[in-house]
Length: 167
Ligand code: S3P
Image 1 (cartoon, rainbow, N blue to C red):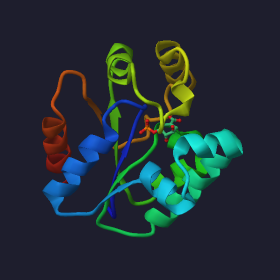
Image 2 (cartoon, rainbow, N blue to C red):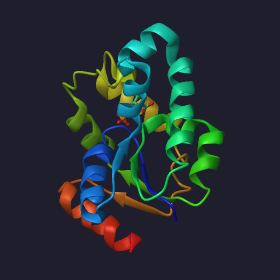
Image 3 (tube, rainbow, N blue to C red):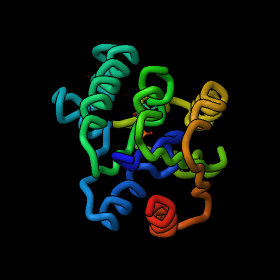
Image 4 (cartoon, rainbow, N blue to C red):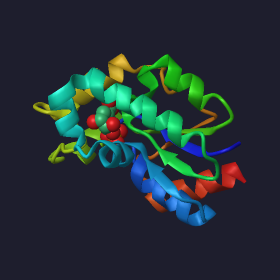
């Protein structure tokens, strides 16, 4: 399989764990949100403000498609990447897909007070927004090869498990 790709709800630890998996495998780490910001010269929040969620999703799709043309990378995605069936089709095509998961309470604890530069969807009542996203996305991460709960675990432990599963 060409790349290791991390999917999952916002706050499950995709970026932190992805960096560690990449270090362990000696592979580059690509964070699609960071790549979108680099390509557009805008923060995620600015993109949402200027182009709406649809504009952001289009960039997300284009960046994902470009990144997945490569191989030997660890790719951390944004939580909403699974909303588009064409993204899911790309992910199902020869990628090792790991879904990170966490209880709603864990996500709320991790994301309370988040400055939201990357997360305009959580503006306002963080807990209510997270519960809404969980409802809307139920089942959408289930196509992954493996699902790993990250509650009460160090990112290093989760990363080591992924490396073990991949090898
Ligand atoms: C989003 C999650 C964010 C980012 C954007 C939209 C989502 O990434 O892509 O704010 O729809 O869940 P994280 O999963 O890293 O928070």
